[in-house]
Every structure is written in structure tokens, then in C-alpha cells.
Image (cartoon, rainbow, N blue to C red; front, side, top):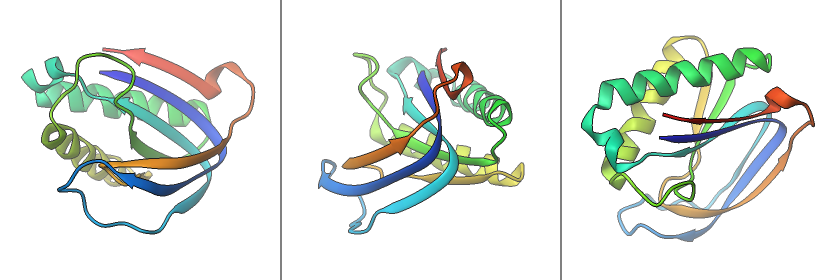
Length: 136
């Protein structure tokens, strides 16, 4: 797993190009204030132990959100951080279960549209914990 987390004062997206045929049809974007955006790249090796991958992801998201004084987390599939890629099915399940766990822990959790290239806009402050990279 490669995980790039950025605290954003403002984050918005708009679906531009569908790149997975089985993805749901989405034609509207969203805007978020005061959110931790997680650019997540699930790798093939992550599929060997779903529970371990999920646990580490949730733990890192909670830690980074707390460090940035936010309870809003956006999960964004960003399959550009490694050459190895998990299957789309694995990644979507990981996102769904991670979103549910975050919500159960009193976080506001959201996902960007899976299977789309998105127009993205973000406004991120310039301090060290506003940008965190993890590899596990």
C-alpha cells in the first residue's frame, strides 16, 4: 500500500472520464472543506491479507486526521504511486469497508467516484503534517 495523505482547507472534484466499464454512472462533483484527502494505491501484495491492510489503512487515516484536527476523510483511489496494482474489486471493497469503519469511529468519511479520472482542485496549507506519505 502506498498512501499519500494531504490535509486540505478545500477539496473538490468533478468526474471527467470513466475508465472502468463497471463503474457507476456519476455526473456530479463534490466540494469539501477541512478534510484529510487520502490518495490510496492498493498494491497486489495487499490482497494477501485484507484485514491487515484494512487495519493499517484505518489506523493511518485516524492518526493523520487527528494530527490535522479534522474528522472528515476523503478516500481517493490513486493508482499512480507504484507499478504494482491490486484488482479493482479488492480496492473497491477496501474502500467500502474503510469508509464504514471510519464512520463507525465517528469520522465523516467519503469516497471519490471509483473508476473515473477526475478534475481535482485542492487548497492545502504549507506545514509538515499537512502532507504525509506512508508505505506499508
